[in-house]
Amino acid sequence: MPKIDDIEPLVRPNIQSLIPYRSARDDFDKGILLDANENSLGSPMRHKEQLHRYPSPVHNRLRETIASYRGVLKENIFTGVGSDEAIDLLIRIFCVPGEDSIMITPPTYGMYKVSAAINDVGIQEVQLDEDFQPDAQKILAARSAKTKLLFLCSPNNPTANDLNRIEILKLIELFPGIVVVDEAYIDFSRQESMAEVLPQYPNLVVLQTFSKAFGLAGIRLGIALANSPVIEYMLKIKAPYNLNRLTAQAALEAFEHKDLIRVNIEKIIEEREYLVEQLNQAPTVEKVYPSNANFILFRIRNAKEIYRRLADNGIIVRYRGDQTGCEDCLRVTVGMPDENVRFLKTLKEITL
Ligand SMILES: Cc1ncc(COP(=O)(O)O)c(C=O)c1O
Image (cartoon, rainbow, N blue to C red):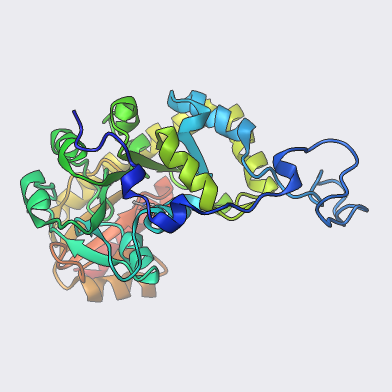
């Protein structure tokens, strides 16, 4: 049995009692629409349909499509402006500014910390171990009564590895707050999504995104999967029309190309394995960390200098050496096959 069987006591009192914004479109979206002060003459781009109308506040069709793809119900899906919106909303639902905190496990994705800081919410850190794995006992011992959210990222950014599923499950069971498992890169991993255990855990939130495996970073669409009480709160506090029409249309269109998405995932995994193999053979590379994502973390002497010299040659990677545990590390995204070859060639040339 999870420690948390009801999320209600974790929700900030002002959010519990909030009367959300409502528009007439929550009740009616057909007919002669004279309710929302839109421009009735239409948008200047006639070929783009309905852009003069506000989008749906709840995007039921999109949520149904995503839900059936992920094997959950529409009521388990929140659609947001990237998963970054979901991170921010979760902090705002559960953490009282100036009082509560989130817990993160560095090295990890930077936005959890930034979002918490923006909201004046504290940040507690428990470092991942030398294999970049979480230690559930350590995390549980470090939390305080004010720690409302725990963020775990699997596969983790920037380290690229899957977190140990047993430790994640232990934390979902025993952490007396909300556990957010960020699965931005799950489709590049062979590990199953934590979404499959959602029915057992009211305190679990899984984040996914269209920015990676779906190749749609430009449309800004992220999702949260959770039981309906959490989703209801996310819908309650989001901006009324957070997701725009073009984004919803593009995402629905993407589902007509599921085969291509799958093929591209396999290609990226193949290229990743090639890059790992080649980096392992590079004499100046000290360590290549195992990857279950679409990027690779590797350690190389003088990483900062190498990063700059790669940039001088038009190849932009990410310097991650400023994060504890990633000293002298660079993170490289899997590119197109010719880009990967150029990256490897340039790396070799500049480190000779
Ligand atoms: C772990 C992780 N979560 C979330 C995001 C943000 O995703 P989105 O583009 O959906 O905001 C990223 C982006 O790099 C990421 O690495």
